[in-house]
Image 1: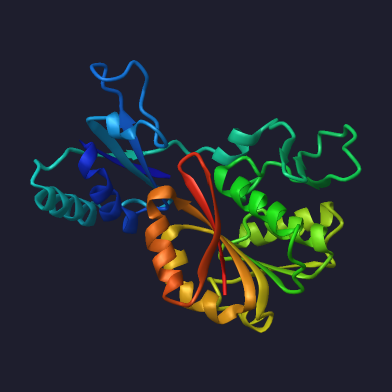
Image 2: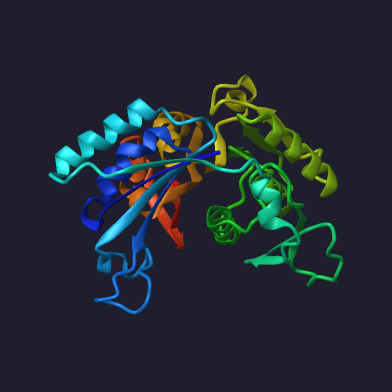
Length: 302
């Protein structure tokens, strides 16, 4: 894993974030505390505007394109009329970040859903939907704000819809596919570009007794025949990143049944407008949104 960061005036942070996004797996903007204005560090939701400066950072699995990043930063600095900031390139230690973060994580309650590791065996309320998800190398144990947003959306949707065809695009650990299968007892296609995620989804489906309902396949987006032939879908989860969400908006519109619903996540709050614009162009409208920390979950419908 690699980290690249620049410190820039707060008013220019979004410009630099957009410039760095093509080189990133994730993008973050963090305000730097100004003691003259506030005794507390600024947060994204309330006090980011108080910060004089922000750190814009990206993280990626691949070694960064240094010439490309240097050029993008130079262009952004010229555009905003500020000196070119110093760029930090940092290789992160080779660690199993997911397992380290979630080792021994407690049971999570998100709406009607209880997410717990296999080491937890305490009784649960009879009306709760319990899923056993252990920390692993695939993303998704319910702790992250994006997964929490999707499960919150699923809990709300379960009160008013009953889908027959469901797709979990970018399934990670398969937590959303499993939750949908357990909620409605319907077949779910779970796809991911990462073969490790496909394997983990199958394992989790087996652990939770849902293997007959969850079909885990490897697919770059909507390209796999099994993904295309499984539609049109009444419900689609796409918990990925803003750029692929924008790029695949036409595929989603084509693969979503009339009246179908899609839950979009993996985007930061400042990326909402761009993602929504791409989907509105395809005839999809915003139904509901959820925000947890810096992250947004959007529910759209045909």
